[in-house]
Length: 258
Figure 1 (cartoon, rainbow, N blue to C red):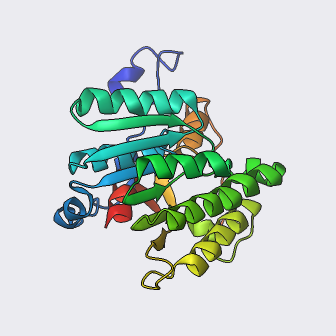
Figure 2: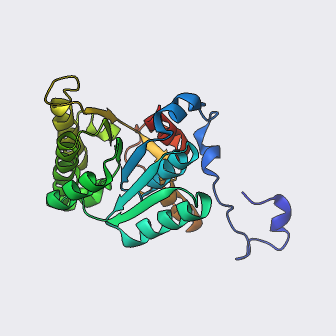
């Protein structure tokens, strides 16, 4: 809220609500994780990130760069998102060998060729459609990206002997009540069935991580609340008994790496 002295001229149009600091909403200290173990995972290895231009993907790329990978491949179907993260890497890590690829995970042949060319040792699959209401009204698109896109990526990783693939999923996949949650659960089930690391025919390990609401991510409820506050309210909640569990983007990405 504004300081009391800001009200000296009355309640005219001059009083603005100050921006909400996302960390202030957390209500707890941010979790500190084992960054040495993350460095051992990343350092000197070839890494590929899908959905690299999204909020989770971009933070993944930032933290991966900090741990000294050998080479980094960035995949996104959003031209602007990919351009933004590629320019950031060029500025912060000019010596890192990298490749920015405009591609859709739905295109099986294209994905297969990229994995063959880049030969990544570690793949982070963050590409997804995750806005629940939009996926509810566009179910085919949600299934094509979240299910078929994940199947394409997992199959390509197994075919080309990638060491590890990490599927970035959601807590909405738990007993799903939405098409988005159900599509991510289907993706999880496929990856679980395919994860047969150690068998002669398959040396690829596939793991899944799930998240709740990530503060500041694309699709988070917080930007909506900020817009509603700026407009003078009201704030809308799904249900009076709703409980939400939050983490920051940085925490979520560290948890992915850990």
